[in-house]
Length: 502
Image (cartoon, rainbow, N blue to C red; front, side, top):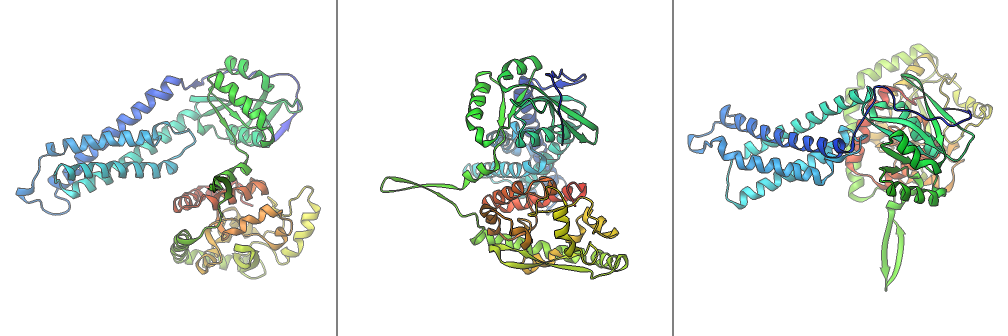
């Protein structure tokens, strides 16, 4: 992001052709239509399931004595449709934020549909109704596919409309510090999220405009005034939502802004300081009436560790078999491209700060390691804890291409299979990097290093080191098999986009 200094106060009018989402439409009409369409899909799923079982006899011939008319399933189908709407509403599926994608929705939809179907089956058992189990199974599978397919289509349609400025939310950011700049950059570069970045308020006069280079060219966000101008500016510009992005040290200011937003009946969100995420680890207790506060251990232990290891073994073994031939081709290309070994073995700091060996395809010229310290010293403002160069001159021709698509990391699946690494976890650090760590940074060694992680799917090399470590700690404290699965699935588009890969 580039910052330019300019004087004066800039007011951003509503963009031509832009249609914002009205409160009634966003809070009632759309959720109601979403719920009713879900109910309709569930009903159709039951009808199709009935046809599969009783018309086409999928799953075995149905004896004449066991044949049931579709009217028998009217009540279960209606009940399931109603339960799906109720459970989905309780889970908040109909009022999710705009940035929630299909991947995040999947677990809620699967859980909600499973809960609803279990409720119907229990009621059927209680009232001694004994329909075909296969019909219920077919209905569940068809309904799940239909509900997910509907959301995929709606998601694609919404993004296309938002790109054209239809149904967007006009957003005002409060604060232009580190957090404010990051969120402003995100809004400006991601119109598909459905937000129009109108501008920002900040009490500092030095920066009057922010510009960000995107696929659509350079886009700008203007400083519209000071924080005291919040109410008149939101009214004048038709602001739909406010994002408060002040530093944690300005807690008093954040509290006052929150209260002002509430009094003005203005929707708002607060960007948290990543240090504050550790609050989830707090455990409360008491001894003889004396309250005690502790912190949960961030380590992944017990059955959680066993499940994670089983996933590592299964996935890494599968990938090694599938990628065996491409890896041989890459090895041949490395041999032809430059002098030196095919594989590069590096000592890294792993779990519990123990030394471990990590294997990668060689992407640099011979003697690249000896040039590293000189490059760090020669680069003004370089962070030795994670020094990266976008156009590193030490890379070979093939190495640049391999780094672009992260193909140099394929041999690390062997390290994962052997237990040196995990599929998901903190980036394995070099000993020379660890020498510059602060004490709190070393908490990332509580878990096994990973091939990918939250840092990989949230900016990769574009993140600062502190941001990367905080994401690593958040991952360790909130680990679940589903979180690993989501990170792995999000890694695919992150790698294919090549953003931050250097």
